[in-house]
Image 1 (tube, rainbow, N blue to C red):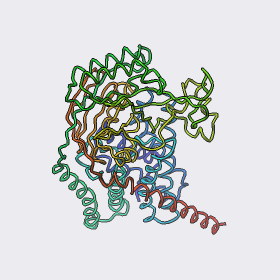
Image 2 (image 1 turned 60 degrees about the vertical axis):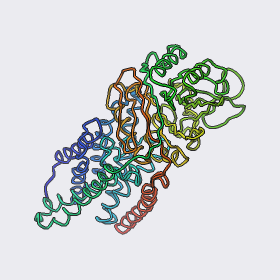
Image 3 (image 1 turned 60 degrees about the horizontal axis):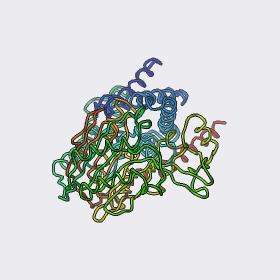
Image 4 (image 1 turned 45 degrees about the vertical axis):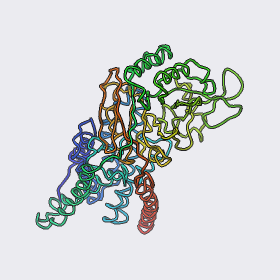
Length: 535
C-alpha cells in the first residue's frame, strides 16, 4: 500500500475540493473533471480505513474538501449577506461531510462493497431531502454541474438533476476502483479490462443517448410571442429608494419599444414593483391603471410582473403573520408574481421556495423567537408568506408557471407546476445582489435543466443580467449582458405533454432517501453490536 503521510492526505483532500470547484459552471467550467473529483478523497478514506485510524480523520478531510467546494463555487453569496454566506458555507459543508462520513461508517461496519454502494444511496438521498426542508441550499447539487452542457443530459427528462449526481458518483467510484487495483493492490493493467469496459459504458451510453436525443428532438409548433425586459435598476441603491411609479414607467417604455399587438406575454422581473402594497387595493392603485393602459395600447397583451405585496388578516393566518403596527389584526408580506390578462381580475401567486435567512427564518415555527431576533438584527418582515402548493396562472388557452428567483433551482417544484398544466415557464429574478460574479451566470444556466426536465420553453426576465429565452432542449438564446438595460423578444413553443420526470417527479431521490434511512439504521445496529462484542 502507498504510504500517505499526513501532508499527502491533506493535499489529496484539497485536490478533491479544487476539482469540484473548477468543474462547476463559471468557477472553472471544466466539466469533465467532475468525473474524477471524488477520487483523491476516496483514496484518503481508503488509507485511513486500512490503517485503522480513527474515523474522525475522515470527517476532517471530507470537511476540507467540501468547504473548498462550497466557498470556491458560491463565495459571491457574501455580496448579498456576509453573515448569511458564512453560515451557508459552514452548514452546507457540514451536511456534505456527514454524508461522506456515513459512507465511511457503512464501509467500516457493514462491508466494503456495501459501503461503496452506500455512497451513491446516501448522496442522492441527501440531495433529495435537501430540496425538502427549511434550511435548503441546493445550489451545489452535483447534477447542476451539467447546466452549461445541456446536450450531455437530455435524459434529465426522466431522472431530473439527481440522475446527474448519480452518474458523477458512479464514474468516480469506478475510476477510483481502477486506481486502487493498479497502484495500491499492484494488479496489472490487463486485469482491469472489464472495469475499463464498465467505466466506459457508464460514460458513453448516457452521453450517446443524450447526444442523439439532442440532435433529433423537435418542438411541436405552438407559437407564443414573449417580450422580456431587463430594467437594470441597482438593487442596493435605486431599486428600493427611487419612486416605484417612476421605475414602473421606465419599464413601460422598455415594453413599448419592443412589444406589438402580436405579443402574447410581457414578462417583467422579480419585485419590479418594489414598494409593498395591499393586494386587495391593487385595482385602485396607479400601478394597476398604468399596466392596464399598456395592455390596451397593445390590444390586450398579458403581463406577468413581480411585486412586493401584503395581505391583512383578522387573526393569525400562518407562521408568517405578524401583528400589524398600524392597526388591529395581522399582516403578511409576500414576494409575488402578478398576472394581468384581458379580464379585470388580476391573479396573484406568492413565491414558495424562500431563501433561508433572507426571506425565511428556518425552524421559526418550532422556535418562534427566531423571527423577532431576525427583525431586531435588521430584517424587515421575518419569514415571508408563501403558497402551500405549486400554482399556475390560468388564461383562456394557456397556463403559465411563475417561477421567482430561487425557485428555479427546485426541479421537483417546477415539475409540479408543469404537472398542473403549465405550458411555459416564466422565471422572474433579481440577480443584481451578487454583482458581476459567477452567481448570476450559474443561476441562469440552471434554467436549462428545468427546460430539459419538463420539455418546456422558458422566458427569463432578470432585473439585470441575464435575461434570456431557453428552448425545450435547454439551449439559451438572446442572453443579455450584465448591468445593461435591455428588452428581448422571441416566439416560443408552448408544450402540454408531460415527461416522465414531470409526471412522477424525483423517483430516484425518493427511493434512495428511503433506502438511505434504512441503511443508516442498519449501520448503527452493526456498529453497536461490534462495540458490545468488544467490551
